[in-house]
Length: 180
Image (cartoon, rainbow, N blue to C red; front, side):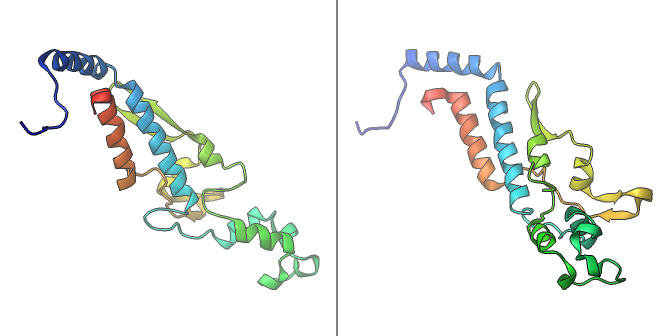
């Protein structure tokens, strides 16, 4: 008889089915692992500036604000002008503005640190508890008098193909254990 690969005897199959049943009663471990996969995916989306499409660039007003406002962003002799140019920027402001990215308002990476998961009976959710997280995700009006339009920069996204591959491995290992 040719080798048919891995086979269970009757006793081994019964044991494996019993183990599988006991694992299937509590899905919290694989759901927590899937949550970690999705947190990593979300962080990657933010790090690369949006997936599958890049985020809209930051507005000039936001860039000036991140550089410390007009008093710190522009050279003293240029602050009284009605129009500014790149040549009027301080060296420090140019550096801050060139490094500025959407969803990364500071080196502390607030969005990254705020992403967490919540595991339910048979589900896992991930997201941020920051007040401004929703407007970053969906876009909308903000600022005094809602005078600023913020474009949507979705960072909480469904799993990508590479995420699904890892999720599948997690679920197969959970359901079948070493037999997988």
